[in-house]
Amino acid sequence: MVNFDDSFRVRMKERMARFSMFDQRGNVTSKVSVTVKKGDNLLSETKPENQDFTWASDENGPSPLSYFISSLGMCQMVHYAERAGSMNIRIDDLVIKVDGKFTISRPRFFTEIEYFVDIKSHESFETIRELVKSAASDCYVTNTLSKACDVKGFLILNGVQSGEINQF
Image (tube, rainbow, N blue to C red; front, side, top):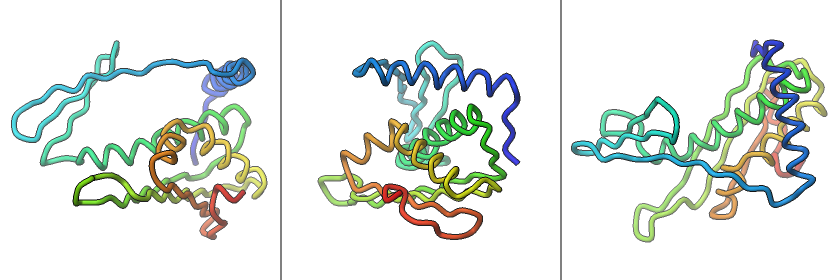
């Protein structure tokens, strides 16, 4: 079972109210910054601005492409937590698998990204469908990537294929 404690739920309700205010204003922007430092061989280390942690990529760990496509799943997970926590939606389990197809020859780019949202929950299909639609439409990464290549999401609810997310 995915747990949202009371303080988290309160923070998410406040956050969702702020986002609603931004939606009403329209065209509100912000900024995120990271610094990537080159190490030996294939090692690169990334540090977010004003934070005290780093992550790295080298020949012994995840490739930059794995990090890249994982950002879609990670970003959507934030939006699932915001919505589910603020709306008291119970989620027993949530996993997002992301597959990216890309060209190896030049020009190199992703041609297609598919993601599969596997949710186990006792909530109604309508409740989960709205949660899934919101998480996908709120996701910066999903929206940005869909401008560059074909992005398709699919819902699997309680083990049953439930359709393409953008068709809901």
